[in-house]
Length: 349
Image 1 (tube, helix red, strand yellow):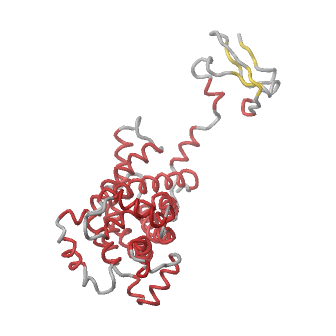
Image 2 (image 1 turned 180 degrees about the horizontal axis):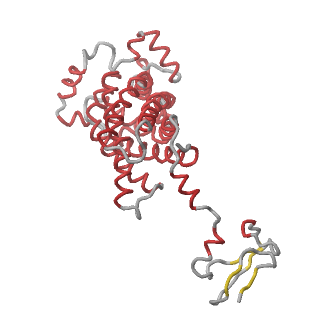
């Protein structure tokens, strides 16, 4: 025996079990109840298998195809810029802790000092330079990494050593391209620590680039490029290569738990962020010191290494906690944004 919802309704529900239907006045066009278009049926009492016909008409094949989309080369830069807008205050605190020579000021004390001296806006000092850096540095490394991966056969995943090699090459190029933006970023963030008469007072990132070229010359624009490039190699391996590997292994070993969804993206990215922080912190400290120092302070990387070593081994990991606190959210947000861009705006190979 069947109970049709209207004479022309394509849906018929068997009366094999007792049902309780509750009508509510709401228009749900996708039910196709032609004779009663202003009613829907309560789904909680329907037997298993029938409620799915009401809840969604999504084709499972469409959901599968969505996960097979490939990210475009510029998605990484856009995702990193969006993440930078959220984590810039943490990045600013990290720079302040790394550039102080005496380990007397804590993270909380530094935050209070910035808030008292410059207010809330002080935490976003240098945001334009941070965006410039991400749109150059991250766009280059993400773009190269994703493009190079596509040159290999897609029938099986790449081994980790190939991912690390591609990430290292991409990171080196990205680190060099992003050095001017990184230089201006460090200077603008550190400006509020200086006395007012010693501040550079760049209006924004582009103004900083032009003033450095005018006042110090083009070579100074790439000051610390060796250190920035070395750090970018390790950072890109720690973030991109490890993220891909962790995500791949997790989805293969526990497919019922880890799927191509935000939970897996979060787990993979926060693990990769922890690895990347450990790998890059010593170089990050020296890079920040070299970029923020006046011209002629350091003869090279070796000189900066000796200068930092005077503080002991802990000197190379100064600001580790704020570095992780800043890098972990930035990495998580970057990959969450990137994956959403890929799933919704990517293309099929």
